[in-house]
Amino acid sequence: MKITVVSAGLGVPSSSRMLADQLSHAVSEELTARGKSVAVSTVEVRDYAVDIANNLVTGFAPPSLASMLREITEADALVVVTPVFSGSYSGLLKSLFDVIDNTALRGMPVILGATGGSARHSLMLDHAMRPLFSYLRARVVPTAVYASPQDWGAGDDDEPVLNERVRRAARELAEMTGTYSTPRSPEEPLASLPFEDLLANITKPAGQRTQAPEHSSNR
Amino acid sequence: MEIGVFTVSDITRNPLTGEIPTENQRIKAAVAIAKKAEEIGMDVYATGEHHNPPFYASSPTTILGYIAAQTERITLSTSTTLITTNDPVKIAEDFATLQHLADGRVDLILGRGNTGPVYPWFGKNQQDSVELTIENYHLLRQLWDNDVVNWEGKFRTPLRNFTSTPRPLDGVAPFVWHGAIRTPQIAEIAAYFGDGFFANNIFWPKEHYQQLIGLYRERYAHYGHGAADQAIVGLGGQFFMAKKSQDAVNEFRPFFDNAPVYGHGPSMEDFMAQTPLTVGSPQEVIEKTLSFQEFFGDYQRQLFLIDHAGLPLKTVLNQLDLFGELVLPELRAEFAKRRPAHVPDRPVHTTRKASPVPAPA
Image (cartoon, rainbow over all chains, first blue to last red; front, side, top):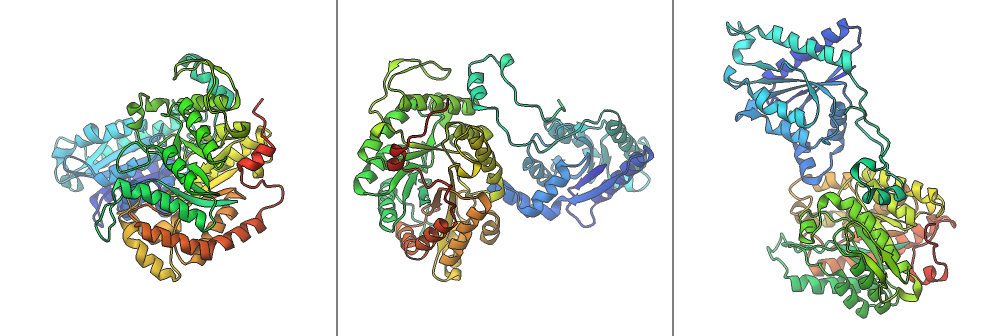
């Protein structure tokens, strides 16, 4: 299985990358334990900042960004981790998902993670970041993992330690890919119905139209 | 092979002087550019169609009719005519009239348009874009190919016993190209009717257009109009040149960096590497243009965008003089040498009149 990890931290090293690595390590272990062979590739969004901006301006991805986007759309599952900026996820991360076709992540299993300066931003994951992936019709695991500075030490008293949350999210992802993973075909071939069908469909009621052959069976 | 220019009709500030040309200046410049294109030996002048500032070309047949009167040889075309929001009856009438005035030197490239609000401005819904294209073009064909039309559809009031006048010149409708950048249905329409397919080939990498052209060629053969490599393909391109490559780069950079579509984005060097843009010497323009043939196969029409991004008229005319002197003869000779005998030449009125293409069964 191909797992792509997207880390939107800006510092080097960044705490988002630390969390991303922890999550991908746990995911690998959970999948390996279930008899799957796992290949992980990690993307630092920072390295593509200018390419992403250029893609927004011109409408196409320069070659290096195009190959990074394929890493994301052709993965079997994603781990996406962002720092919290101004009450939400990173704007650069949003721009990255803005230049990906909005149907390319349908059915994609995803773990969401975030890091921030205090635990007070943790619900950003569920109130801001989860809706983005709902829009993209990805399948987000129930546990989203937030790490505040405390989590890199003893953690807070009333919370399971970071490792346990990471492990729970990884287990959920492994179960999701194991039980009801559907084949995904991100690149649908370019095709059209024959002209006669295109013309006839215009005046037919919606339910009676000739349909193009279905390539993607996720929904 | 026909070689010409096409314009978007943008009115853009000159980044060097800060001057913005008036609508009047740009409209008169269109005429000057078309006449210059004919003078240097080009074959086509095509104008876009837009219905909002900063563009001037809302009335293409008016512009082309005036140019027709001032030229003798060049083909007048569009880039593109909006098949979605124009009434197909008016397209049939306007372009048949232009055909008579220009003695057949007329064809058109149909497109869906790229400006969302044009749909509501003309009482249409953008969601219907592809269906409007299919139904409107199907009607347009009948209006030109049949003397009497009885028609009923979804988007337009029915026609009973309607004759579109004037009838096409010599009974041969203007040749039609279909332009698309991402919609496979457009390639299908072009293939079904045995029409041409035009890929604007300007703003995106060539790989992007290859799939659509491939689909068009495949379906063209499927419908029995000829082999895949006999389908009628047109491409856009853009260049800026000077005798010395570095002069072209220095002169064009401020225009590139501030261009409305791709400015303030990638470097000119990256954009040249990734798209069909050439900024350089005449030899570099020749080599890049010939690479299109190597990539897309033999094709029939090459149009260049040369007057956008605030380039002053004087510069555009100089570009054309250089092109006529140092590029056009070489391109013509090389394209002619490369084109196998079974690949058709460009479709023009005189040859189409002699051997009309049968309508699809």
